[in-house]
Length: 134
Image (cartoon, rainbow, N blue to C red; front, side, top):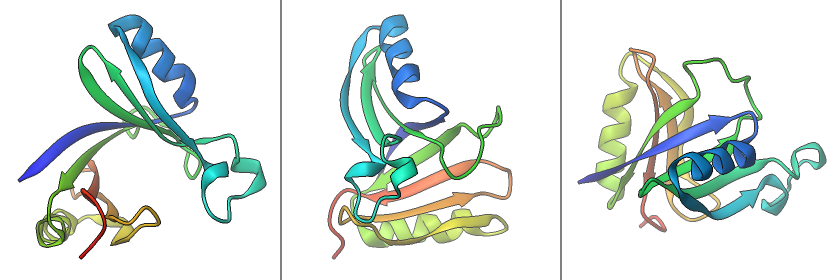
């Protein structure tokens, strides 16, 4: 079974998150910057790699888009978190059919599987697992 989370790519994730908490009520729960990652590039050190916020009773995830510009339409990614590697791999492979793999489904530095796909309809998907891979 999957859990759907809205993941927003932003030109300024902190400012956008502050706006959403202002507009909808809530709070920013956590912020991780590129500077906290292993082998971070100096020019990216203050950019947000992952921000979690609760706004309007809904959990959102966000990050600064550092690898491609924001174009209205590519800022929203559907993020599916699976409890097993097998479920994640199955969904990733099927969603990738006819689409474009932007990041292969592989173990990430935080211990879970992670992959990123643009499906054949242009919808962006982030596929991940709950925790460390088996």
